[in-house]
Amino acid sequence: MMVRLDSIFPDLAERFRLAPPEHQRKAALNATVLAALSVGLEGEGVVPALEHLRRGGDMDRELLAKIERLATRLDDEYLRMDEDIEEAKRPEALRLFSKARAASALRFALSEPPGQLHEAIYEAITAVDDPAVVVGPVIEALQR
Image (cartoon, rainbow, N blue to C red; front, side, top):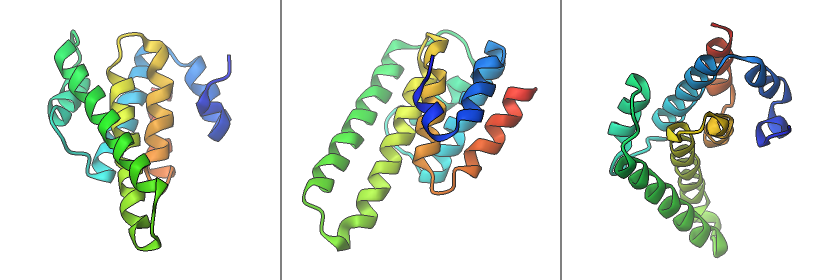
């Protein structure tokens, strides 16, 4: 089955499909943390959500809801700004886009079904200016 990751990095998508679930989860963690740090993702629940990804355990539904609200809010702000963008505001719109993608990556990484982890990687890659920042550590996690 093709996923969005296939559209930008088909080799990485294939490595992801072939990796055991624990490596897939580690790859999603690496991608999400790197994206969040790279774009300066802030907001209610971000730090606890990243900590939860690092240590694992049962998901706190309220924490997931906070991250979902953050991702939605950032997406909405970006879309509003992008509709009537002036050239001078383009850098701010791009920053909002990157933060929205990083928040979305965090949301997918936190999701219970492991079938969403490839979406976390895709969103993390689209959040950063240089995909190599995310792709290298993801490949490394998939190989361990």
